[in-house]
Length: 179
Image (cartoon, rainbow, N blue to C red; front, side, top):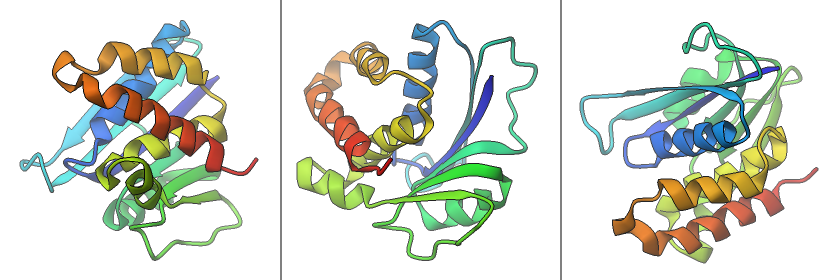
């Protein structure tokens, strides 16, 4: 089993953090992982994406040509990476921000009002955690308990106040996706 995930959006949306949480939680389950970040010269507001591969065996290359999953947090990223999702792959996106979705008979599309849901619990800037929960439900790739443990270990001490909020957001994202 090898699952390829592209996570994309703008700098400051928690793109790299989202990828790091997925990678770390998968490592906790004994899986092989690569995490390959890429971002523009401007950290906040510029482009950002990361590629995460989770596998049972050694991973030869961290670069993803055809993804099994795309998690998109803005429209530009959605448009840029949509065609890199392989047939029967999944596209999970923030429908609060991305208005123009492609319909596809060859891909499974999962719109999630992530920014709106995040604002109901805490802050729309934490939409990445709603999308993480949605990804966990759609993919079944990682146990949600390991993701919560990963959050506890990854979130730095100066941001500890966000731990309980992030957990709530992940659980909310997990619960709003239809089976």
